Amino acid sequence: VWIMKAYGKPTTEEAEILQISAEDDVVRLGRVRQFENQPMAIEHAVVPARLLPDIEEIKESLYQALESRGNRPARGTQRVKASLANPTEAGLLSIEEFGEVLRIERRSFLQDGTPVELTRSAYRGDGFDIVMNLESDQLG
Image (cartoon, rainbow, N blue to C red; front, top):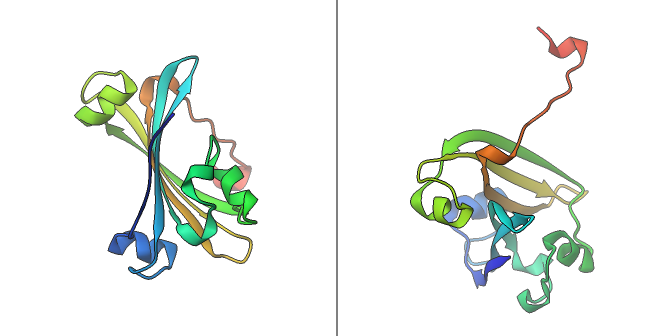
């Protein structure tokens, strides 16, 4: 469920991460992801506006909207850390204030290395397990 779709200017940090000027337009997208009618995650994405169609054309999938302009990400990096929900997040996720969340920051790129998105999310801590497969050279 989209809770925000808006045009704006990047913060200094966002402009640096997305390798754009502070004068460039970005699209800010916020949504609550659900599973079986239960809120599971809050996602906030910032994307250079030139990579997307008009925000009214962005329906359910950010990546479909990017792909419609030939800008589907080819690779990305995610960082996951444990944290506590602030009051707004707790309300949107239907959890206790200061309940556990997983904070995930994703940066994605086109094939040529052009930054596409910066997404910061808060996932309910009670709804996810993280499994990692390790090879022998990663085991000590």
